[in-house]
Image (cartoon, rainbow, N blue to C red; front, side, top):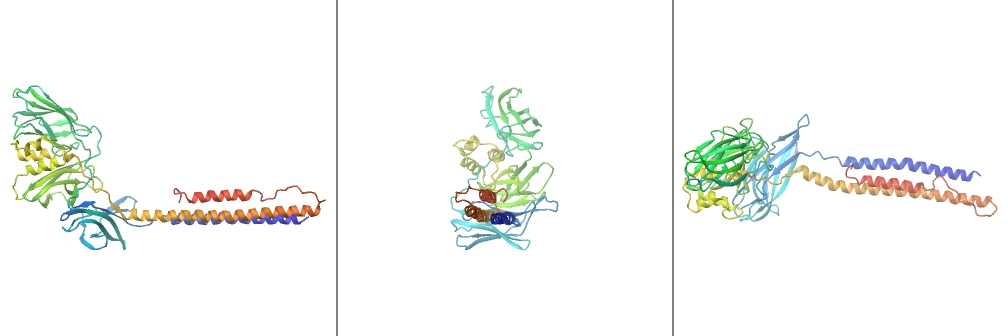
Length: 497
């Protein structure tokens, strides 16, 4: 009568050992998986460069390191960075060393050889904390390639430039054209912006009357060279004004409502060319500060520089129409000040045709800008300096983004994610296999105990079929297998591992 009891004790012992050992093994597997998924301690080197370039031109480059100070706040550092331009086979075709920016990070320019054509790799390398790091991105070089990055800003519907229809009270005495434009492209609240109103060959006075949030001082200006120039200050997040052409008797001859383009927290920039040398002035809330300057030919980023207050010279630029974007830091593309400058050869040549052609080349349809069409058609006889300011007023509203950048941590994180995904599947497989082994042992113990009990009853009985009896382990193998399956599913969870 002691044999069934011994079998029951054996089943109990096997079950107890399986239960005690299996959670420990599962815990070890999950702990190892969790530790393996810890983020790698790699310095965050970031690199910004164009995607496209033309042979014989240049490209702007910026690099910086994101770190944390003693209190855990992010800081921007400027490591020594070398940039190489290589072919797909690894042949070096160009290189440059970035210099420390006066604002953040490192900056520089890379000259593109004139005989290049195709896809190349830009590799930025630096040594940080004794470890060599590098990031890589593609550069497409073609003779006729152009950047497709759109120019624009993120503003709400009440901060975008909007020009209403012209209302004419006296067509005989009033101007045929009443075209107001903001010279800086945008008005920054509490900073003065310049309103330039083109009236064609009409002579008289122009008045700006506030409709909402605009302070004008003085509110009227005489037309000179086809333009009237007024100073405006926007108070608040929206500015609307009525632009009016006045007769000699002060009567309104024509009027047009204008919603000013407003950019809270932005910078205002103004550039001028003296021969081949370019000067840049900028203004920001809070007083003078160093700024980053990104120079574009059309939408292609060609130079990366920085200037400190009091140093307003950018030096010489090649002949052409240049877009200058002025930023307070590396992360403020949307609030950049935008201005244009035309460099002609020989110096002193009339820049108006170049500016008009540049404006119309980006127009959605021919004749979009009446001032540009008037200049190219030979009908314009007004002030050349005012015309340049007016031509670039509308495109100055949009800022061209720097485009996507690359980071060492992004590449490391991608590699870590792939490796961790493999580890999750291996851990789930190990846990599931362990569950199958434990369940098979329990099932085997259960079946053996049932057979031994049935045999014993037959030996001691009267020959009739003994009733089926449950043992301690009956059905527990299925429950244990279910628990291991759930643990395997947990190992596959990206949230925890």
